[in-house]
Amino acid sequence: MITDALRAEYEHRFSMYDTDGDGYLTVQDFTERARRLTEAVGEPAESAKAQALHAGMRNTFEQLAALTNLDVEGRLDLDRFIEAFTRAAGSGVIGKVVGPSVAATVALADADGDGVVSREEFMALQRATGFSDAQAEEAFAALDRDGDGRLMVAEWQGLVSE
Image (cartoon, rainbow, N blue to C red; front, top):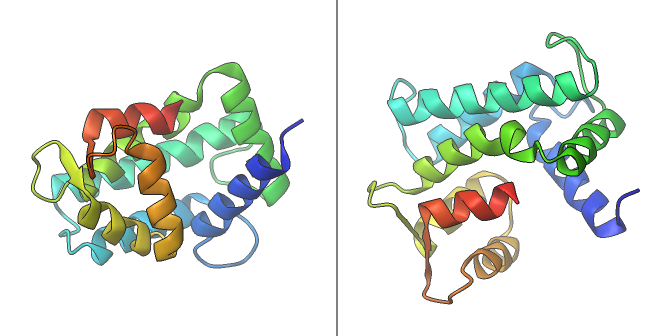
């Protein structure tokens, strides 16, 4: 059983991944999300960062599909998506599920490659993923535990995978 707040977070994630709005997630939805993110921050599609994000997103879908015994060519509805994320979190494999896509997303946010994501870089990426400024500010504040106005790449990756 998950809390209402966690269910709401998973529902929000589902809606962000459901790029075609059909109520199901497929590998194509994850590929499209990666394309939109790279395009939104001006990253060339053929760059190493863009390719890593595409691979990471595909991995996330494949891992979620495996957790629900779904063929990777299949579709996840909201309930199966929540089931998969709940199972991943409960079994300690959430890092395996989202780790590669988180690492690639963080690398994409770290536009200058200095290992630090500034508030501006973070906000730009969060807007591209569909978050409002208020939601992005809240997320940044939660991740910026020392309050210095920047996120260390390794810190962000670790916190998201917790």
